[in-house]
Amino acid sequence: MVSKITPAPEQQTLGFRLGAYVGLMKPRIIELLLITTVPAMVIAANGWPGTWLVVTTLIGGILSAGGANAINNYVDRDIDELMERTAHRTLPSHQVEPNVALRFGVALGVAGFMWLWLTTNLLAATISTLALLFYVFVYTMLLKRTTPQNIVIGGAAGAAPALVGWAAVDGSLALPAWILFALVFYWTPPHFWALSLKYKDDYARAGIPMLPVVVGVARTTRQIMIYTFIVVLISLALVPVADMRWLYLSVATVLGTWFIVEAARVHLKPERAMKLFSFSNVYLAVLLAAAWLDVALG
Image (cartoon, rainbow, N blue to C red; front, side, top):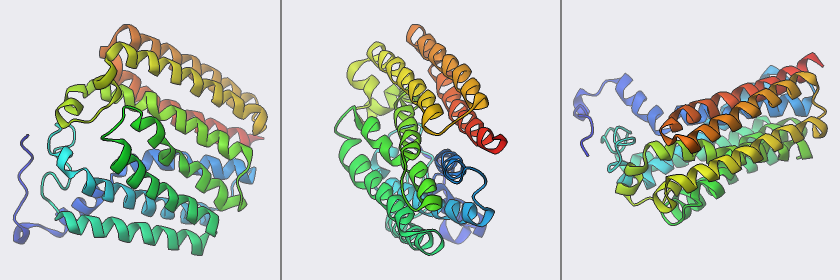
């Protein structure tokens, strides 16, 4: 696998170096994680929880998630070089030395814990750091290379920002927080399996036992349908648990039906996998925005 040419150290501009470090943090993944944080805070506060609290919680989440992703880049640098989808990343393209990336990730993780502890509370800081440790040690180092259930169990790390947001506001965890956690937890497999259908050969080349590689396309698309149905049921459970009203219920019903239809289409035509992947992002963002608006209007 050929990666892009990286300028020699003496030719690297400040912008190039900053871009390399930002790349280690995987900002597109961070955006997705933070989508769940603010709605959880709004629901916990039954309204806007305060701009300062929202900003400080998001900064802490960026630091912790960025740290987890940077360490993930360090651990996965060998397989990232083998995959077309990841060969352009910071370490496979030799933009940063591996040990530097590791130290950067650890520093971000420590900073995230301290920041959240000082600006929110110890519970939010602890949950965020536990998510980092789970992502690195359980998902990246243990599950990813050994079992096709890697993304199922590993999804707990990606679902944690909902708990962090709730804890930052409330100082504890109530049932609606766990419903939001479950929503993202069960949303992660169909979202990521859709992507893995597209890059099935990539994962096989790198020796990663993603579900399509291990059980085939047909069984993977059936699992996508099952998990999608569970996601929709969980989204509707938020109505009685969090006292959602007509706006959220309407959006959840329409989006949920659409999500199930898209999953069924992928089962019939697996080449539509990336359309499902893209829609799953829209689904989560719009659904949680509807929850936010429902509380605001109420």
